Amino acid sequence: MRRFPSHYLLVNLVNLVNLVNSGKCRRCGMTDTVNLYDAKTNLSKLVDRAAAGEEIIIAKAGKPKAKLVPYQPPRKKRRFGQNLLGITYIAEDFDAPLPPELQKYFE
Image (cartoon, rainbow, N blue to C red):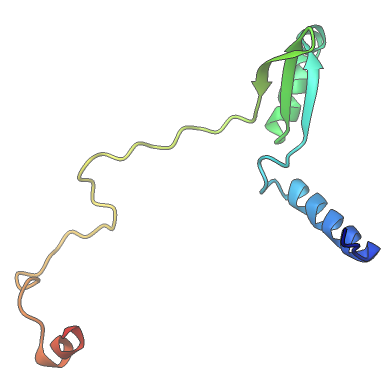
């Protein structure tokens, strides 16, 4: 078994904590399990925690039943054929042959 110096482990631990605190690692985020009775009595506090980015598991008799996660608004659906780049003009010769000085790069 390979042994690493203790400062390597400390650096990795600090990096993991920074990753969790940054919110970039979804699986690494704080997860807490709360029983159903406590969830009912402290729902507003749990919602505030979830809104802050924490994932909360609600369990009944020790078995997970639901997950309280931060709300993410749905993405706006694209309409088919919508002009994404804002191009409103296409030159009449857009499909004309390339000039010889450019054509040589494609041969």
